[in-house]
Amino acid sequence: MRAVREVAVKGFFLLAGLTFASSSARASVTVAPNSSADCPDQAALEQRLRSAGVTVRNEDDVRVHFSVEDGKRVATIEMPSSEPRRITHDGADCASLADAAVALLSVLLDERATAAPPPNARTTTPDAAPTPTARSRPLLRAEGALVYSSGIVAPDAAGISAGVALRPLRWASLGLAAEIWPSRDSALAAGDVTLGASTLALAACAGPTIARTGITIEGCVLAHGGFYSLSARGFPNIHSETRALFGGEADVRAALPIAGGIGIVLRGGVWVPLTRLDVTVRGASSGFATTSVGPKAGLGVEMNF
Image 1 (cartoon, rainbow, N blue to C red):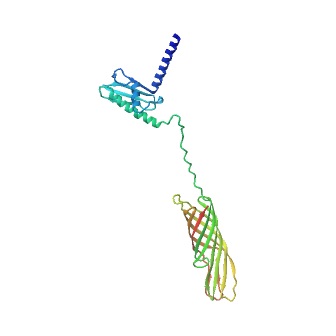
Image 2: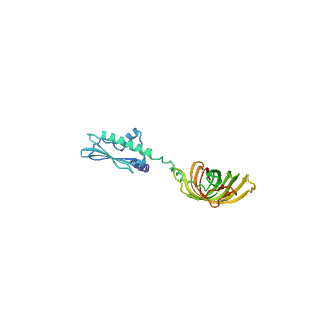
Image 3: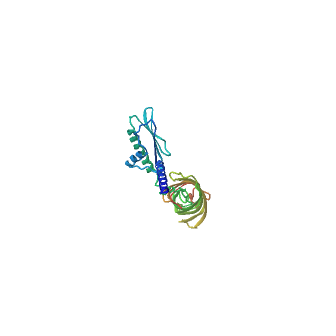
């Protein structure tokens, strides 16, 4: 029987020690000797917090110390990972100071409970923002245009042009362009001379692209090779002929993007033939000749791939 009582007594003290240790892990209240006896102890403080709807958790480890400094009552509140908070009170008793301490603790513990994730909640990290990728640069472009010139087949003539270009560099391109100049009639002596032309050109362009607008401005050089188609009417002896055509061109090319890789193209420059065509009639005072240097322009559409 005596052994049973000893075990019961030891169990009681052990349980009391564990209860005290658990309680002290949640909140600890100390009162300085010079403070009044009406300051709340640990149990009273926790009861007032529960009445306010706030529960002190084990991990909160709240420490409250009531004291008197320079004739004023002071409550010091300490919590892990935060600066100590001090409340001073001029009253004659500790009741008002305790009310202020409970109010401040309610706010602090409520903020901590809101900020801290639940113990069993799995911590998640926000999805990483997608890494921006550089915009792919078009490597190929196709172009179709209406072209104008003075002196290739007539003083004023229009033609059509089509071409493709490869852009090995952002600021440079290399391609091919074909041009067709429909036949034009020119009166000569007693008859008419009909002249048309077709060329295939090797084109090299270089120039910057304005980042904000996407407008590309390039300087281009084209080397043309092709043929003239010459025929006549109203003369006793008529022989249709095909003559070689070689020439060079230098111009400025501006491309304005619209949408989906489509853009408007403007071109302007000069045409310099290396093989001019000079047509004369025996006994006639007038003749026909292609220009030596003439303006050239174009308006078209491009597609980038």
